[in-house]
Amino acid sequence: MATPISQAAPSYEARTRPSHVVGWIALAAVALIALPLVLPSYQVSITTQILIFSVLAMSIDVLAGYGGRTTLGHGAIFGASTYVVIYWTAVLGGGIWTGVALGILCATLLAAVFALLAIRTSGVYFLLLTLALGMIVWGLCLRWTSVTGGENGLRGIGRPEFIADHISFYYAVLLVVAPVTWAMWRFVHSPFGLTLRGIRDSESRMRSLGYNVPLHLFIAFVASGFFAGIAGALYALFNNFVSPSTVQLSQSVAALLMAITGGVGTLLGSFVGATLIIALENVVSAFTARWPTVLGVTFVLIMIFAPEGVVGRVRILLSRRRKRQSSESLN
Amino acid sequence: MTGINLFQILNGLTFAALLFIVASGFTLIFGLLRIVNLAHGALYLIGGLAGYSVAEASGSAALGAVAAMALVALLGAVLERGLMRFVRGAELRQVLLTLGVAFILDDIALVIWGGDTFTVPVPAMLQGAMQIGGVFYPKFRIFVLALGVIVFAALWLLLNHTRLGALIRAGVDDPEMVEASGINIRRVFLGTFMLGCALAGLGGVIGGAFLTLYPTADAEILVFSLAVVIIGGRGSLVGAAVGALLVGLLNSIGRVMFPELAYFVIFGPMALLLAFRPLGLFGKTA
Image 1: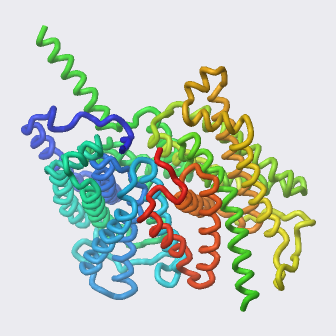
Image 2: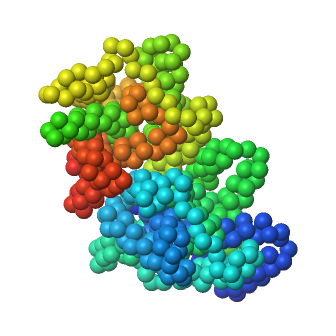
Image 3: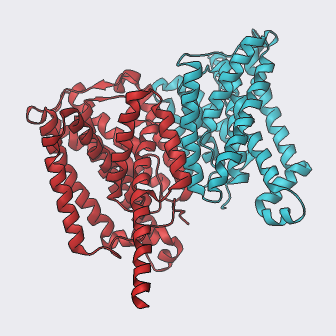
């Protein structure tokens, strides 16, 4: 049995009219497109970072929110992609787009390896396994100095000319993130995604209905790794530098925290979560070097007081109000 | 050549003893209380550093070890009583909460002790080397090996042959019945939690003496402990011992043969094992 972090938030379809969804999405799109026109370039760069980490957080949510498998290994999958992109371009002198493709491919393959090992477990055991696997990747990046540069990391060769400045890179990232988000949205709302949710809620029932549970989870994990790999490749272009800290546990933790803060099982909540956490990180870092403590305290507080996350909480409140309204209208 | 091999094996065995001391605390809490304490590595680090400071100030490593165990057990009590009670019964929330605590403890350690590398001083009577089977080997490491065996025996006796051990085991199976027979089960669990944490503190002092302590030491010992528990199966003392031996020996052999890929050498067998026994060698389904 998979144990979700919190009670599943009421599902999206159950309460929102399609016209509302289209309206909100149009509004968000306009806001995202207009953003660089009003923000200074440093903030545009932070927004780019938020978009990239939203993809990573969503890739975690695909597994955690829909498959009921909370992972702590996605930072490593993400970072593996970053390492490959930078190694390919800076050390081997390959082309940047081949590097991006290879990075995503390697992340997907790594996710397949993780999946094969971890898919038979669930709950805390799954978490521990992905944690251990991710840390092995970290250990490898730290110690395999001849390839990864050890603690010094690797420096990239910079972005191609046409996306070199902050604003054009922001639009390029937006152009990638939008269809990727749409793809993940389609993925979790497809019949396959419904089956995943069935597995999350009752594995034994799905098994007796004749579904191949391990295969579904395997595909979900690999797809999730593919999306994390896209985020990692974007991060390589964004950061132009990779070191073991890109694959370390705190990366997985921060990304999971973003998914949880937004609301596990809400997918788009990851944008809210990534925005809040990255904004918090930037604000805190301006005053103190104690960001890890703040991250830890945030994690503890969210686990105690709001495990369903911001979007999850809003949905619960909305569905309560709707129930109240409908019972009033009946009276 | 045989000399080198014996040396490697002894290195592996002594590392395994350290791993067992740390991982036994982890598996004790995991198996009996169903709590995955990801702050275990951070407790190891804090314990080791505190032990270092006390040992340097007082000149007695033994006092350092005792102080480290006491401090870490106290931290464990605060964690169990102060934070875990809010998320009791929710497994994943518990794990993630301890992860948050690990980040806080690491950062505190960084503030207090800085980013330097520390070596806990070894007492004079354990300094130097002794001859075993033709090789000279540090006395302290032999002491660690013996200590690992003593901890194993003590824990085994505690769990299987004392009233407290019976209470712990009964509490795991049916806490309500134990409560009903007039025993404060929460106190038993708190004691177990503190004992598990104290073992991390003890491990920190010992590890600090021969592996040294530095800011990422906690993450390294945590991944080794996880490997031990994943291989051995949760909550199994024998599993932890077998897992520690396996990981310790593989690690020291791997370090010699593939210096840069030593992590991979423990990963291989773990992967192979998981393919056949997802719950570990001695693991039972919950």
